[in-house]
Length: 314
Image (cartoon, rainbow, N blue to C red; front, side, top):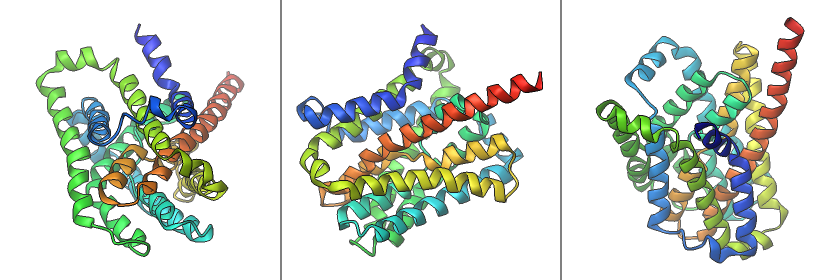
């Protein structure tokens, strides 16, 4: 049963792509999942991540600070600046530009840990990087969004900060407390948690696509191209950054995945809560599909290369 649940969770890109595509043709199937439901959905995802954390995880951060700090720095420099540059280069309409910048300022997505596992890269390092960038998002996401997206529309940094505390920090802390306070319950829930997170993300993305169906269809290729360039560039520059600072091959691949994959669900919630134009959330929803597909393709290639290298060493 656990193996089946893992296989279903690892099919994350397929879930997101199928649901988002269906939403274009049958928006009513997903548009009901909106408003507070999306906020609670993201809180469930963050809670699911929180119950996997232990005090020992934080101790490991202290033992490998350089690698984790490098990932944190790459996350909050490469993606925000790349998003801003792509938005300017393509002359995106203001709501799409703000949405793209917002998702670029979000922390690494939890799906990056799954993709890292598939790629046979450094899963513990991926988990630590995701954990640190997620906690850092409480301050970094509002500040970076205010700085970069404020050139397009007014940005309420204080409001973004409070929302990020509510939907990210509090569920993580509750999850961490549950892990240590109710270990038996957590052990029973853990096998199901990744699949619940994956399905919730797919629902969030499909809901946004369904609610903004006409805009997605008529936005032309520019918005889609912008999201693709953001994530493709994130994977590429993340790998290059790892090479420059001397990471080995496995850790370079881990950093690439961590930088290229964003917490699009957080971007979606923040966009809906704090920006008047509903189109701001669209790039965030599309983002989940693109980074999942690119990440999965890279993971497959790297997994094959790892297997080939292992065979040659025997």
